[in-house]
Length: 151
Image (cartoon, rainbow, N blue to C red):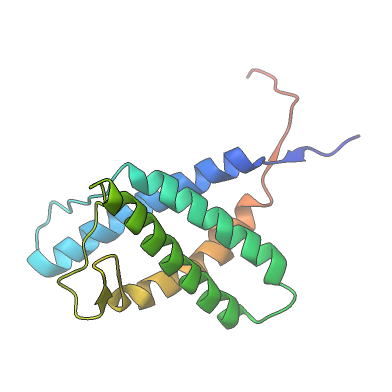
C-alpha cells in the first residue's frame, strides 16, 4: 500500500498565505486596541499581504529544511526574522514603485525608508518561532489521500 502524497508547493503556499493574512488582521486589531481601547478590534491588511506572506513563509520553510540539523533553534529564528525583514523591505520597495505599498512606518523611531521598523523585531521573532514550531512543522506532515469516499 502506497502512502499518501505530501502537500504540493501551491497547497503549502495557500496555507501560509492565509495564515499570514489572518495573523496580520489579528495583530493590527490587537495593536489598535492597545493604542485606542476600541473594542471593535478592527484589523486591517491588504490583498498584497497574501502573496507576500505566502512567498516569505515558503522561504522560511526552505530555510527550516536546510538548517534544522545544522544550527540551533535560536539562530534559525534570528535568520527567519532577518528573512522577514528582507521580504518586507523588498516587497515594500516594489509596491511603493507602483504607489501600492499598504504600510508606512515613517512615524516609528527606528524605521528605514518607512518600509521596515526595528520596533516590530520582537513580534517578528516570536512569529517566526511560532511559524516553525507550529505551522511549518505541521504543514510539512500533512498528506493528501487520493482515495476519497463520500460520507
